[in-house]
Length: 278
Image 1 (cartoon, rainbow, N blue to C red):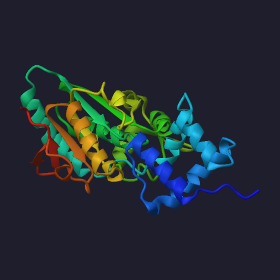
Image 2 (image 1 turned 180 degrees about the horizontal axis):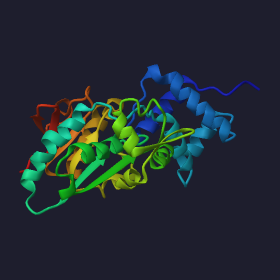
Image 3 (image 1 turned 135 degrees about the vertical axis):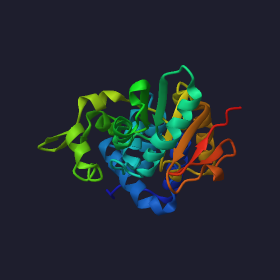
Image 4 (image 1 turned 120 degrees about the vertical axis):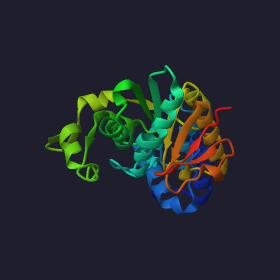
């Protein structure tokens, strides 16, 4: 019996289906990456042919296989204090701007998507504790979301490699982590400071509960989307933000090329995007 394979037609069928489900568009250059993971799951589910596997994937009532495959297909490349200039912007410019408008409200809400393995939301928590003078005057909620359930479990565990923590100042590493035989364990206090949730940005039912955020971090995710999915994501974040709230994108991403809903704000540390107050 010949080994299972993925034909050109199979690839395009899967690519279209996965795009509709997640908003992620695989270019033909990613064909090897996609085929390899499809074949892995076909073998794991005892499907010798793509057709039978694809049928199961689409019609499985629990959606478990789609979630497992999504976990395999998403790339999680991050480390602590990545693109640190935006954290500086958060504490030096964004938060002072928001606080000046807040009046009696004492809660600040930050949404991080994708959470990946947790380095970004935990970095924000550390940065606020160490660099923001008003941290003790406000109740800060950090919610971090991802489509990948495996990576969310890893983020909640809070165990990191030498590479992940390489950019952290030594004082922070010693203060917030405990060295173990298999890595660096983040403190329980920091783990409890971030709430991790599973969200598919392309599913309105998933994103609808996420409202009234002051700041959204969505860095290096939209580069995997096509124009339509980017526009939909921009509208989702617009609905999630309070009037006057800010969104931070990755250094190679520009909201101006995606949507006209936001106002461009050039702070000394970074360019960010603001939901208008009216």
